[in-house]
Amino acid sequence: MKEKKCIHTPLLAADAVILFGGGIVLIQRDRPPYAGCYALPGGFVEIGESVEAAAIREAREETGLEIELLGLVGVYSDPARDPRGHVVSVAFLARGRGQLLAGSDARAAGVFSRESLPHLAFDHQKIISDALALAEALLRPDDQIKVE
Image 1: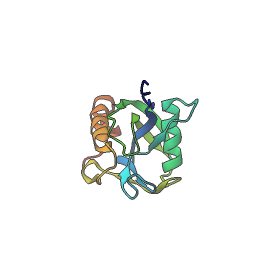
Image 2 (image 1 turned 45 degrees about the vertical axis):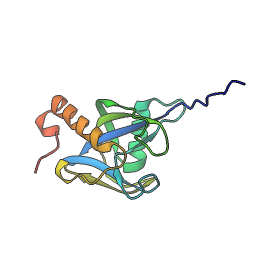
Image 3 (image 1 turned 135 degrees about the horizontal axis):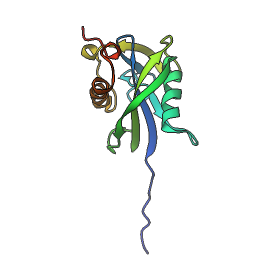
């Protein structure tokens, strides 16, 4: 008898590196994995939703901010990047506007300078590093994160 292989499709997520108030918006996760750790706003793409729409929706749900997507940071697909299983994340650079408020599955939301970034969940340090390189290439000096 031939053994059947069990094939699972990776899950798809969208994350946003949001420039706001001279820094980067992070949320403190309220749920596992990494409950209590800081992470980028983001989450799973819903059926019938584009990755861009998912990034905008997740940012609104987790931070209260409306965001403008500025560019694609990258696609992060290391099968070991998420302890729940194989999750592929599409990350965007964005600019936020509005009032920052923690929502849905976030304990807190805050703005951090590049020098004051806390330890981050998943591979979000790498995503932020890539986003800052993109920001330096795309944005006017007054749009970029202030280095203090």
